[in-house]
Image 1 (spheres, rainbow, N blue to C red):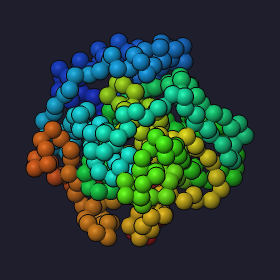
Image 2: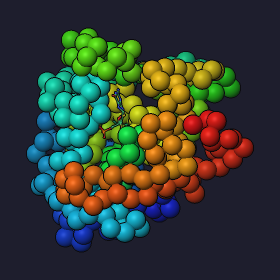
Image 3: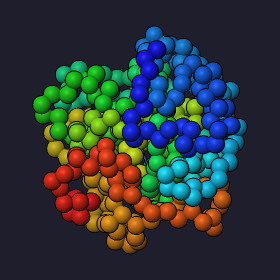
Image 4: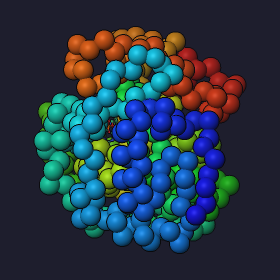
Length: 335
Ligand code: MTE
């Protein structure tokens, strides 16, 4: 087994949870065949993980419902309770209200699935449902997620870096951007056939990154959270997580990743270009035209009126790892 030294961006598990919960979760991860934050699996160990991490088994490895105290000190990050992570969602394909994705996505079929990597690459390929979990070593990453609507969470994701997936396809010199696409299946996704339910979005939902943003080690393809496969409402079976950008960049239920030469269209930019840019880096100094981005409401177990307003940090606190990507850019213009 290859032991990886934790990188500076990885919130250490024992910093985010109390000791008892930390130990419980580590034994759960061990049972599943791998250790989380700070540990990478060798490819020989992966088969074991996949055996346990299949859709049927995943349910039996459920963590108990955990509640955590409020995040009083910005340095001491506290995991958002699992029952908040999977019940307060934005997934307009299943409705625009926060509670609708959980209510309306439970029959969503993720197996069979196909994720195709194509475009300006020498080796295009397609992954099946099983291959999403077995082609790359899975690791746990605890990241802050900051929605453009000014709420935030701290989530333990499972996944692999997008860079590994892209390298396998061997991008050519014309590959300047990466375009992502969500499944289009109005029979299963009621928001795609109803303007009212789907918020007036033109589906499929699409997103994009510049190639250097996509290759940054922080950029994660997630297949799970809290030690289990992703629930449908969080973007099963595979989604993007870009922790230094507003949450709408973290596109869910992806079927297509295409390397392209020109900046691809993105859903929210297309809908309201003055409000949502292509870059969408978390920036407390650039307000949304209709509200301030200087602070955020951290979702905790405390309910709507808990005192959990905290300052928003530039690049959502990941500036040390990503600020260089934008060093000569005017971030007011390229919001
Ligand atoms: N992906 C798709 N396909 N459809 C969506 O509506 N919402 C985005 C993003 N990915 C969205 C999406 C927004 S606005 C946010 S904040 C995050 O997903 C929310 O992720 P979560 O529900 O897992 O917290």
